[in-house]
Image (cartoon, rainbow, N blue to C red; front, side, top):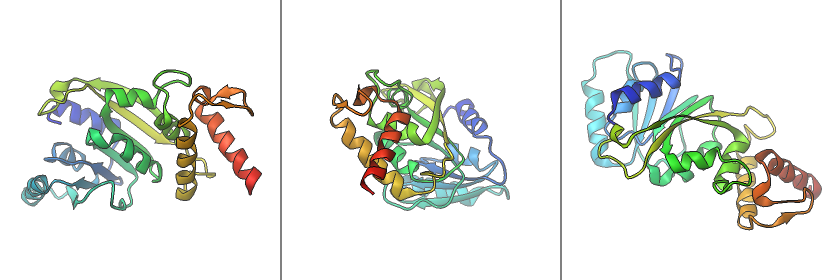
Length: 229
């Protein structure tokens, strides 16, 4: 991302302050990283070794005592995330779904995430619509999600083939699942299996799978867990 106005908007939406510890996934050359670091500590994850050299070079050159950038040369899908309370990221679009599923298992206060427009619209799709998918239910069972605004391709260099969206995610603090990663993992598997047969009629509710709201699917899961425990 190269559009400084978009970068500043993203940080503004995140309501960053000195007490925040921010996770950034896919730091790239650090344009967003160092804007975040004007306000908060940031763990910047980047897989590409060449980009890591660029990031660490910028960190070494920075004399601003308020900047606390911890650069992690790692695959975000494979490492255990450090503790953080906010996630702000322009992530690699190819791993949007996998990273979203991983973030669901982490406890944090707020996320401002840049996604491909099509993926973002799946996250907020209504039950019964063509965009209503497994990832919709998985994400909306645990997060409140809204698209804040769309970004033009010109906000990036090189320009992507798709439009983008800035998305706000706020975890639902329900103690039944929010702090239990094993529960979430099991629930995600349950939803995935349901959507492998999305046209199946669910007798208990008399609706097809793709017609069930996230709350209805969560209730269905909890009822089945009680039934077999």
